[in-house]
Length: 174
Image 1 (cartoon, rainbow, N blue to C red):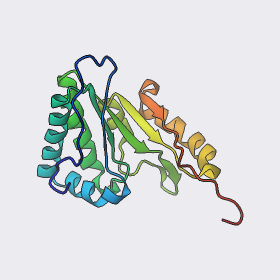
Image 2: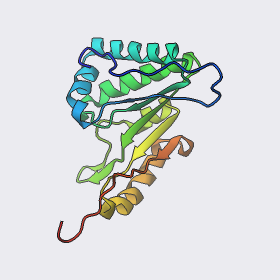
Image 3: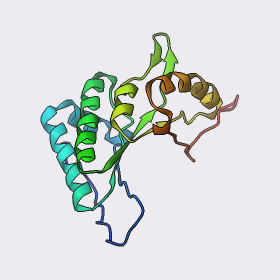
């Protein structure tokens, strides 16, 4: 929400659960403006971190999975601060964090990470979940171009490639 609070509800875990459980905190494209507002404000960012920590602690979760894939590139430093601060606090409490990032692309300026500083994020989190493009016609080439520079920035044991059932295939007619 615009005030840094979390929308929705996650139930606390029963005491007999033995698997590691990381609830997903997600801001999809419809919430992009809201999460960008939260990340841009130091006060809202801190409140958001506190709300996530409270959810993880009261729910007895092992960590959290952050899925904010629509962060403005102008907020790169603020988003990196958000993740590193949250990761530091979770790790102090012996909990984990995973973060979803869109697969970087090569463009005229070179390797474009956008809002996501992969080297810093990769050092701070337990898993970096890479989201490849949904367009299957560019999937292989994009992945082949992106993996070598990513592996130069992030330890391979921290990388997880996501696959989506929402992929699309373009044809000559549409």
